[in-house]
Length: 196
Image 1 (cartoon, rainbow, N blue to C red):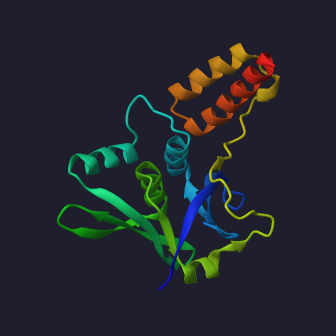
Image 2: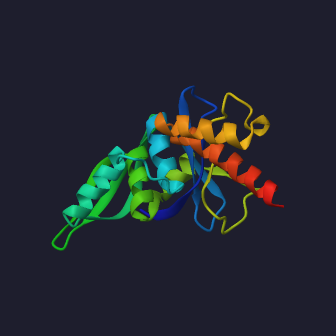
């Protein structure tokens, strides 16, 4: 069965399920998109890695990467291998000096690890045909990863830099990294405006 390479192109709130997020995978050098609904913790784990944030303590997926690296296990690739009743199933392809092993994984966990290892993400062509969406407006060779974070209750654009920095510290203490991305982006925008 043919495997098609994907990349994470967006992460946002799911419009179909409350308290859930959607990770949007885009076909590399193609127009199709594969939306996958994931939980908040998994979205946070993916967002932290995509945004190169460094929590004060390792998250579960960081721990898993550290464990694998300590025992000289590399994640070669991740692939989405099945879709049953709306649930995606994935495999981690790991290798050591002596062996290559496929390990069953939740797709959200597989994606969080793929981002950390920088390994490719694949999907079987029949799954992309079944669950993928054609994006006529997408350009080929899209630059991946625009993380769309949860809207913050306060209107960030009306907050001062001092207020934004204070809010960012509070959010980071709560380890709400998805919300922190929005705040950090607004701080960067205001700082850039101040300089010009």
